[in-house]
Image 1 (cartoon, one colour):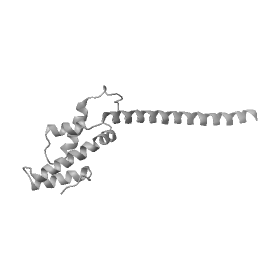
Image 2 (cartoon, helix red, strand yellow; image 1 turned 90 degrees about the vertical axis):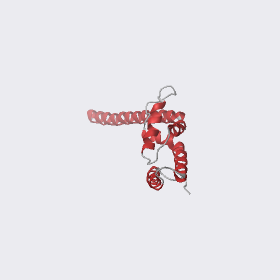
Image 3 (cartoon, helix red, strand yellow; image 1 turned 120 degrees about the vertical axis):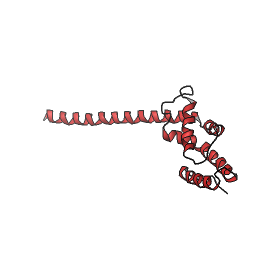
Image 4 (cartoon, one colour; image 1 turned 45 degrees about the vertical axis):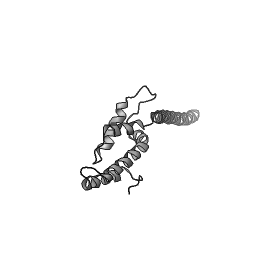
Length: 139
């Protein structure tokens, strides 16, 4: 009945409808939870990178797993259906820390490149100004 191709807002709205139809849970609630867990598990790494929850993590020993669980709890808290700690754990474990680390390294390298480029551009402009000054000094 439900498909997995939704975004966060659609899941939030859908959860509110299902919670009203099945206030004590039921078949729809179970199906919804299964699809939402699958959806969030597939997207949690990208969401974590996009949200910047672990911007200073560059190796596996420099982060707290609790940060991921807190992020998942925050995402799940928007849903009108209760989730068990084992479900939160399942979603949290699907987060690919290696991908987050690589993203942070790439971002750091890009920031370094932009800084270097800006610095090089400044040198180039300064050199041009010096060359113009030299021209007027000769004349």
